Length: 118
Image 1 (cartoon, rainbow, N blue to C red):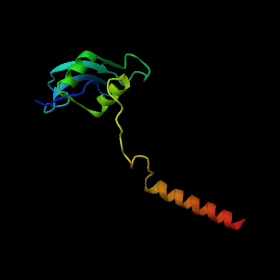
Image 2: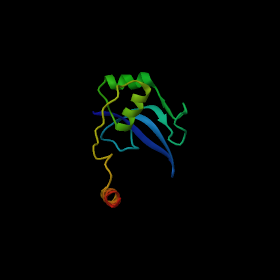
Image 3: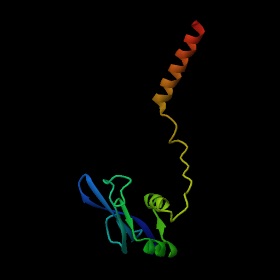
Image 4: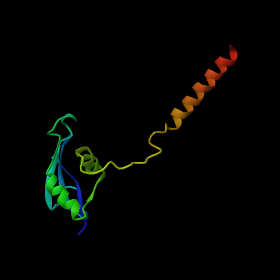
């Protein structure tokens, strides 16, 4: 059985609330889980201690058993200092889109024309 540490969504429409759970990777997102490890409330401010609560002993236990973590849980564990920060390489994220590139080229061309006119 492949165990994953992941978020299970709860709460009502437009009011999300998540449980941090250890679940079989084949189960649905909000389906059966093995153990509840904590909670995550994204509606609270980022500096609030109530935003993310985790039972670190049980998280360490599941990581020791070979459980995989999702990206969001990995970031939470990095913030808590349990895991070392992983490099995330997404080279296309920082590049502007086609229209923004076209606007930048037009702006550069106008600037060059203005510099030539002087």
